Amino acid sequence: MRVFLFALLLLTATTSQAGTRGQFLGMQLIVNIASVMYDGSNDSSPHVLFEAMNRPEQDSMVGRGKVLEAPQKVLNFICARKGENNYHCAIYIHQSPLARIGPGMAHFEARGAEARALFEQFHTQDNRFSFRDGDGLFLIEATPERFVMKFNANGV
Image (tube, rainbow, N blue to C red; front, side, top):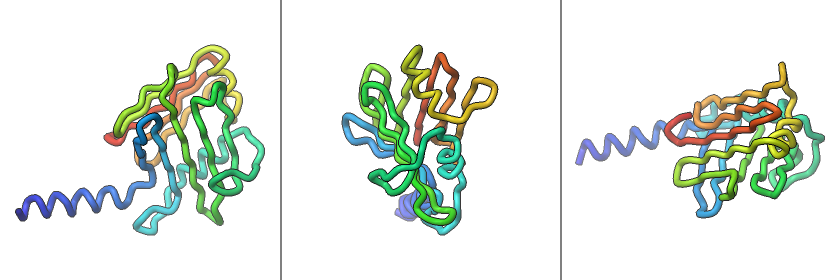
């Protein structure tokens, strides 16, 4: 019983500090990246992602922010400014031929024209875009030919 209680407390302590979380909802996985974490500390990951987006600011369902437009509506990607040093990104990865999703994981990959359309919505360097969140659970690796996005609750 004590071991179970200790394991439960340890699990709660490690997950309560996470700035990145994934929630599986059957036909989609929602990845949330928040700058203000549960313990009050700050993660710069959503701010970095917000600034990397080559999109105009507009009103969205999570506040004033930037919205990535995905061909075929297989992906909803919103990063919003919630206040000073407070950003939030919500990425909805829908089950599709471009995505494999399941509890605690998602893999999205586009190639060709679809990859280029997504790639062009980010500020890039040397024809490449790379992002990894501070928790090591979410990443984007992109070139004009290939756009890959991964989430894994155990690390990517």
